[in-house]
Length: 140
Image (cartoon, rainbow, N blue to C red; front, side, top):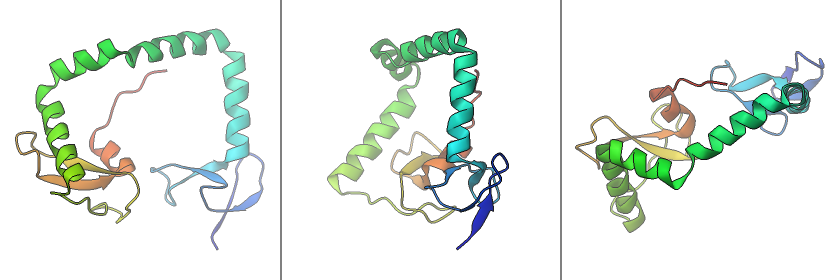
């Protein structure tokens, strides 16, 4: 049983999703702060800047609208088509999802397209490793 010490509360806890949030950039794959301390910090920070976060939430919600989806599909027709073809092939049993090529995980597997013109040629990656292939600029 591996353990880890939370840098905030100094408690020694078992390294698991029960006690720590996953974090792909950490050596052991988990944040160095326990879930309880993380939740407290988020609560304090959000309450201290509540107007900022309300505005952020409003903008973020708009991004998820049907207009956003229509715009994305129109601007990324090759990506959308490749994803649809792959998803249909998986659904119909013509293609089987494989474990992640990086960590061998079978949880939340995505097909990573190197070339969208070849929709059935994918590299299977877990969500965390797929996200690393597609870094996004995140703003707060």
